Length: 472
Ligand SMILES: Cc1cc2nc3c(=O)[nH]c(=O)nc-3n(C[C@H](O)[C@H](O)[C@H](O)COP(=O)(O)OP(=O)(O)OC[C@H]3O[C@@H](n4cnc5c(N)ncnc54)[C@H](O)[C@@H]3O)c2cc1C
Image (cartoon, rainbow, N blue to C red; front, side, top):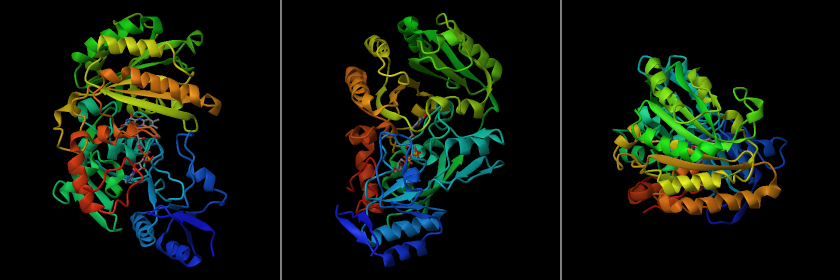
C-alpha cells in the first residue's frame, strides 16, 4: 500500500494504492512528484511565500495529453485538483492541501506567426517568454508589468499592463484557446466554436477547464518605446496626484501612466542619498511614435520638481522587466485592491495619509491607469465586467519576516477600509488575496451568465480551487 493520501471532492482523505499510481504514471509523460521526494518542497513553492500548502501529488505536465490524463485520473478517483501556471496568484489559488496539483509550468512554448501576427502560448509560459518570442518580430500582446507572471492565470482573469489602453486587455486580444474540459476531453473554442466557453474564459478564470494553448493577435510595438519613471519627493505627493488626475483626463490612449508610492529603491538611476526615502513615482510608457511620446512625457515632467527623471527610449522587452527586481518571489505578500472610476480629492488625501505610513520598506501603493481601449469593449462582450474603471489600486504590502505579518496585514486592511467609500465595489479577480470573499465583485453583472456556462462545461464543479463560480 502506498502512503499517498489525497483529498476527494467530498472532503474525505483517500489512500491511493500502487495500482492507482501506476495507472497515473501510465497516463503521464511528465514527472510525478510526491511528498518526501527531494524536489517536492521546491516544486510546490509559489510566488507568495505567505502561502505554503502541500498537494498530494504534483503532476508536472509535458503536454495536453498529460493534462487530459491527470484530469481523467482525478475524475476517476473523485480527487480534488488544483491547476498551476506560473504560480503567481496572490491568494495561492493554484495550491490546496491534499489536492492533486496539475502543474502546467513546464509547458512554456510560444510560437509566433509573424505574417499572420498571431502567437500561440503554452499555459506555463511567463510574460517574459511571450515578450521574448513576439518582440523578435517587433510584435507584442498586451500583458502585465512583471515578466515572471504566468500568461495562463493572467489571461483568464483579464490581463492589463502598459499596452492595454492602446491595445485592450490581454483577453481582448485572445482569438482562440485549446481547453481540456472537466471530462478530460480536449476542445477548441473561439468566436465560432463553443463561443459560450470562449466568452467565459475571457475573465471567468480557471472555472471552466484547463487551457492548454492560448492564441493571441499581436500588435506592432517598439522595439524601443518612450518610457520610464519620474520620481518626486513625497512632500509633493498631494499636488502631483491632483495634477496626475487632471493629466490622465486628457491623456491619449497611447500613453499609460501609473502612480506608485513607496520608498525609493536602490536602483542606479537614483542618487544614493535618495535610496530609502519615501517618494511618489510616475511610471509611464508611450506606445507609438517616439517624437509624440517625447512630447507627451515632457508634460508630465512639468507637474512638479522631480528628484530623478528616467523618461527615455527603452527597449520594450527591457521595460517589461523593469519592475522584476522589486517583485521577486520568496517574500511575504498581502495585497488589497479597489477599482475606481475617478480619483476624488478625499481619495487622494487618503492615499497620501496611508502612503506616509507604509508598514515595511518594500510595501507600495500602486495606482494603475486603465481605461482607453479597455473601456470601449462592452461589459457583456467578455466575462470581464469592469469596463467603466479608470484606475485600479493595488496595495502591495510586502515584507520578509513572519513576525511582521500582523502589523503589515492590519495596515493593509485598514487602508482598504478607508478607501472603500470611493471604490466601485468591483475587483479584478487576479488581485484577490487569500481569505477574501469577493467573488460577486470580481464577476459583477456577468455572474449569472458565467454560472450557466459553468453548468454546461463543469456541472459537478470539478474545477473549484479558484475564485469559484457555482454551476447555475
Ligand atoms: C508580481 C506580480 C505582478 C502582477 N502584475 C500584474 C499586471 O500587471 N497585470 C495583471 O493583469 N495581473 C498582474 N498580476 C496578477 C496575475 O495576473 C495573477 O497573479 C495571475 O493569477 C497569474 O497567473 P499565473 O498563471 O502565474 O497564476 P497561477 O497561480 O499559476 O494560477 C492562478 C489560477 O489561475 C488558474 N489557471 C492558471 N492557468 C490556468 C490554465 N492554463 N487553465 C485553467 N486555469 C488556469 C487556476 O485557477 C489557478 O489557480 C501580477 C501578479 C504578481 C504576483
